[in-house]
Length: 534
Image (spheres, one colour):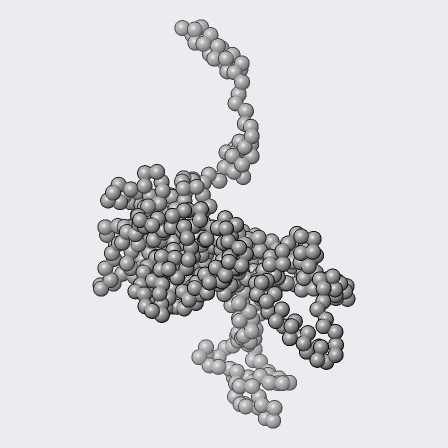
């Protein structure tokens, strides 16, 4: 038996020696390593977008709003985006496909001018576009965009009001904050982001999807989470995502997806909540230290009772002393106090704020700005670098601003315009043959441009010269350059300039001067000369 065990043991050792050991390769030797000391404790768990996002959205929203209200860095990040992406509101400009609609340039321009005028009747008044009567359409844009950044998403309910002779349009927008879109629950003491609808569909944090995963409805609560009271009973309302007859949206959901199969948005500040919170705490500590340093505090060691105050007030300039008590000491210019044995004085000296505070905060702003796609110069509104560095920072920031503007236009402005134009055509106030019968014709009529704030200029002479050269070489149109330079409208500028030049020409002729309209070449030469002098 012993010999048999020896043979078996020898056979197993021989087999183990001949069998090749598994070799780590690829990511198992890098980011997926579970052997390296630096990676052993890094074992995060991750599931689908619904569990990773929906279960944490409530916490992310409240923390992001708290930082927006209390941390200057977070406030700057939100407001910088709002100001540069939306500004005073994205201005509507009709851009129909006149070739497909077989319209002449004059007819297309007339139709566009009529639509812009009619849209202004609805968009420029609070009572005609906001269900609450608080903001006009451009104020709603600012509010929706800021809410999207803070909360991760925002909802606009499509409502209808009674028309009047002075207010023909019934379309109204009611903005709803993200918290009120939630999965219905039977008790206020239970809260789950995932539930099942009565029709068998699944509800993910208030968004109802069918078996194929398509959004079919939204669920909203009548009260705000956490605002429970005796007379406030929470009720739930289900709103279909689209109208069954028209196919137009009943709810506009403004959000930016970062993962597939994601139904709720994530706060813009979610990725930098911890560093911004820590920088706020550090800043508060430095402010406290600076306040303490400004105090002139003395600690007196004396044999007198602790209830005694050995120091009197400062000696005035025209008086030699205030008191001559044995245990009284005075402070004043050139004052000499004779201390008793065992008595001494120590002054508090915190030696703060720290000398590296500014450099550290700048580094943290650069890290947070990189995650938020806002350079530190723009986040801090401190352009103390060279022209090239500051311009590069602005150009990099404007890549993200333009991208977010397009997202916002796609989720909010374009759907609102389609809803409004559908009503305007149905009322007969706008003529659009084939709008309700042919989807291609409908799309041709719905062409629009939304003009927002321009990038701004660090050196107007250089940038105008560059735009002039781009137009001359055909790299840009005059209209595109006008939008980039100041967000204006080139055709309106031309009409106004024509009127101004006519008046100026008449005035010059009356004075016996030349008519004097400069050519493009003369203007370009002037701009280049000014740039060289600068």
